Length: 87
Image (cartoon, rainbow, N blue to C red; front, side, top):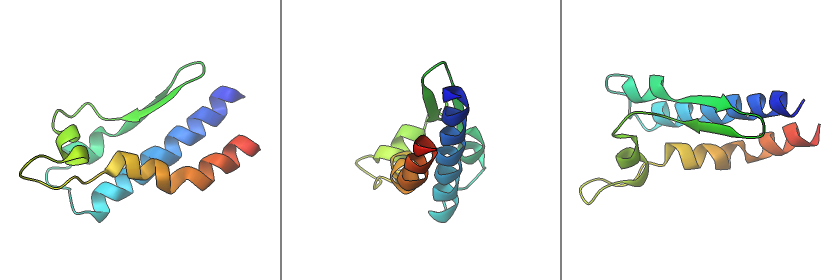
């Protein structure tokens, strides 16, 4: 049951992160958008990407403002996460 809830949470946060990429018009080749996934272990859910330039998009550089698509996804999904956990 816990694993099912974590799977739902992962899917919600992944979806929000992908929406953020599209909304900020950060889609060029689609590599970053398509690389965002989630995985669930026994008691942990991870949402992220293996794209090497994702940290630069998320955190920014001295030449580019940060565009926090992952951190923002958690904030945006907070109410839905709470609802999933309360069920």
